Image (tube, rainbow over the protein chains, first blue to last red):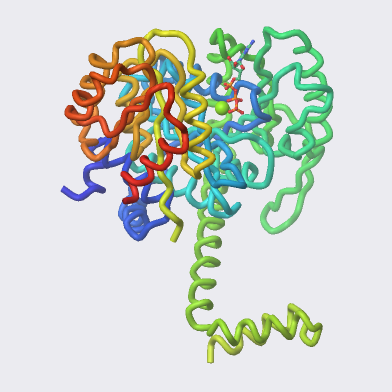
Length: 333
Length: 132
Ligand SMILES: Nc1nc2c(ncn2[C@@H]2O[C@H](COP(=O)(O)OP(=O)(O)OP(=O)(O)O)[C@@H](O)[C@H]2O)c(=O)[nH]1
Ligand SMILES: [Mg+2]
């Protein structure tokens, strides 16, 4: 039996091994993705991000437990932690908080190091999500530490993005600084058992009013129209709700699952589900095309010639823009 | 293509106390460029094998201080084998009497490290066994 067939049949070892190939972007991984692609497009992708230590893994643990016990959904988790920029190594510790899911074959946790390049993480995450989707997981959750561009890129993958905050991280809520609030579909104030939860929620609410557009422009039969916000019950508009949770105690989890379901419903009714899928696939395509063209360019362009042109840029004889034009022209000769 | 990353699961089976030693080793492996999946305290053999499977690791490192290594090691090896992960290498660190080492090696444990072992040696031996 082919490894792809094994994955479709629910073989967990085959699944784990292909995830490695996809993560490493090997030829085997690429061909598996090609074969699995027709089986994708069913899973609900949920991104979970937020500052370090806000309780993301604990939250995912209880949320998935809820999905397993009450909704009988199969859930996969990709938990991303940063690689050390100095050694390239990583300690991936999210599983420590997800012990409730151990021994359940309907849940699959995969830890992942962010590794080197920004684009690389988004690409391998997208690929791994596709593998889980094809393997029949109803929900795929991606946990990332909200810090920078790569988290925003990964959030772009998701249908629904949760941004997790917690009281006691100081006045300046870090994630807000990173502009991460704008990608939130649902805001979670975790550790609601801690003092300061009202302040955190109030701060979020006021930041949200700033981050959230007061009017969105829609194109309707070719004409632009402006829609004022908030418009209740308007299917075209989703205002990110704030949910308090206590992940160590499973409080607020059922309500959170309800909001996630409501968001999925909103996406489907408004047509945003399809447009997010399309946006995701086109940015994936674009990234792959960029890689491919770059590789082709590199294979056609002799190193020495490239360096010569580079040298002319260093001496300010050519501008970078002129140099690129020249190189591209040379490479297609 | 990206260089091959060694993936290691560091686990602490059994009910005994602390995981300081396991954390020291986890950090040393990270500093050697490996990707370490840390699972924390009180792991059953089933939990360890399940995690090793999902994470598709090359190496499982066990920290055992309780003296239960002669029961835990064969059980974990058996579960890994049942899952089809026959090529995963298992290392044990902790308080292991010298007399037990040959028996552990014979059952398929790739390396045994007592309290005196240096993290450099552990890193070096894991590298040698996985990459060759
Ligand atoms: N009091 C309280 N503690 C919590 C809650 N949720 C999580 N914690 C604790 O917060 C700490 C961090 O939790 P994690 O789930 O590892 O947080 P995380 O956001 O995944 O952390 P990173 O992945 O390292 O960014 C742990 O000690 C948890 O037990 C909560 O609702 N209340
Ligand atoms: Mg975490």
